[in-house]
Amino acid sequence: MRILVVTGTGTDVGKTVVVAAIAALARAAGERVTVVKPAQTGVAPGEDGDLAAVAGLAGPVGAVELARYPEPLAPATAARCAGTPPVMAAEVVDAVRAQDADLVIVEGAGGLLVRFNDLAETLADVAAGLAAPVVLVASAGLGVLNTAALTAEALARRGLTLAGTVVGAYPEHPDLAERTNLDDLPTVTAAPLLGVLPAGLGAASPEDLLAAARCGLGPVLGGGWSPRRAP
Ligand SMILES: Nc1ncnc2c1ncn2[C@@H]1O[C@H](COP(=O)(O)OP(=O)(O)OP(=O)(O)O)[C@@H](O)[C@H]1O
Ligand SMILES: C[C@H](N)[C@H](N)CCCCCC(=O)O
Ligand SMILES: [Mg+2]
Image 1 (cartoon, rainbow, N blue to C red):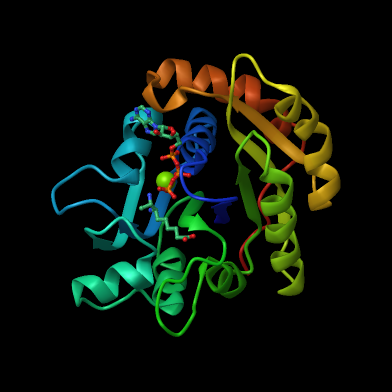
Image 2 (spheres, rainbow, N blue to C red; image 1 turned 60 degrees about the vertical axis):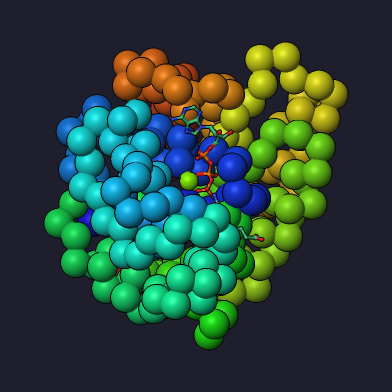
């Protein structure tokens, strides 16, 4: 079973779309895919969260959501507000390891060091517990070089592997920063740019999502990149 941890340079940068694109490619290759969302915030009980979005974009996948909090906040804060138990990194690790799938993709909430609980556990602890590589989903525009570099540094400090960066929502008419960022992201993260997905895919059909994934991520996935096998 391969495991991939997906984080972002922030919230709303296209992590869910990138998760769906990777899941669609894996499904098209005949793989059984499960997506794990440790903590879904900002969504009420019964409403569609990120896992429903992934299923709508990528087709049927295994889906595991360990906790849901209605306030649109970091999971630790949202759990405190709700007065319900927070998610612990060890339970995320256990839930991932319990899956019967060829590929398990774990999507964090917001960026890497957003806290799951008041013990200051984050997605970085989950990646460490799983010895899994991390994919960084980056925003496209001015400001991302700093947040991408900070994320890469935080991963390196913890001995975690940054598989590379994917720009989650690239505009049709990029400005100067959006164009030059494609050159600079690999430099400031010391990791490859794995792909670029066009903006607007959140509303795409499964067919269009798969086509965009093949163009925007397929050459990388087909070119030998693969998540490290879990121990
Ligand atoms: N179903 C959808 N229809 C239209 N737009 C969408 C849809 N889902 C996401 N988007 C848009 O795509 C962009 C990226 O959203 P996405 O949910 O992938 O971000 P994220 O990085 O996963 O955020 P989070 O930290 O909340 O998980 C946002 O601008 C969002 O408004
Ligand atoms: C509600 C939102 N869409 C995310 N799920 C949570 C993002 C938390 C970000 C916290 C922060 O970095 O300040
Ligand atoms: Mg998301």
